[in-house]
Length: 318
Ligand code: CP
Image (cartoon, rainbow, N blue to C red; front, side, top):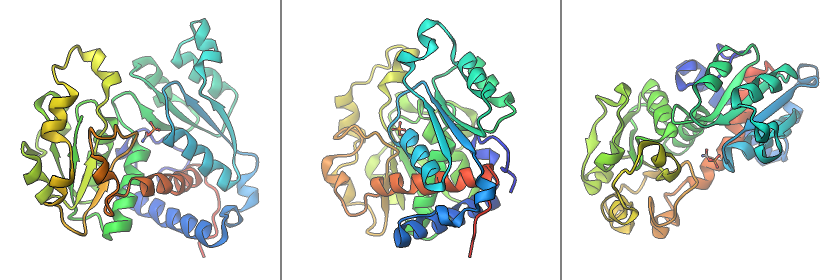
């Protein structure tokens, strides 16, 4: 496995074969948990030893932080959590980069890190001798989100090859969109986006990606609709983006009218947190094709699988 003992900072760090193996083991864990309410019996205790996951989150998180903890505890790993920076030495002026260097100096076996745009901190995680998992760094990437999104598509649609994934919303500021583009293309899916011009991506990876100006036409094309949160906290860094929530909603929100154009066997995804009524209407959030909470459930098992490979845990595959 190419990621054993390695960091996972970008979707391109995994091969399609790695992705298939991660999914196979995530399914094993998910089924074991469903049938036996446990999965640590599948892990060889001697390979587990006293391994420790350190979580360093200097940006808010509900799903990613908690599901890494859930995944680690279900595997039998030990977890240390540094997420309340108000009581960390960052309050005394220590940088994120130095915080990461100091946590690494305590010798955890793997670190999962989330922080805002910070080139020095990014350089630290890129050169660290302990594996680091990108748990959402700035606007760069959120590769474990793309893994769990792809797993959810596979679970519901039976394949990734040839799937038509429509990304709707604030693509420009979205690390989730960047990782999904890289991973989904690698796995043979088609990707397109629908967004106001203010949210069009500028990175070269998006240059040849089809764009829909009309949301109804976009929805007709898609087998999977992936909504993205309007990331107001990132707009300040680029100045006034000149787009109100009301005007976004009028032209780009996915509501009941749009679902009339969506195929019966399609699915709707969103990485969360959802701004209810902005990206998706409440009607859409309760539609039977909506898989947002399944994504969250899958996040635990996909992250458990990823951790098991990075830490080289011996797993009874059956
Ligand atoms: N999807 C996601 O990253 O959610 P959180 O910000 O709550 O972790």
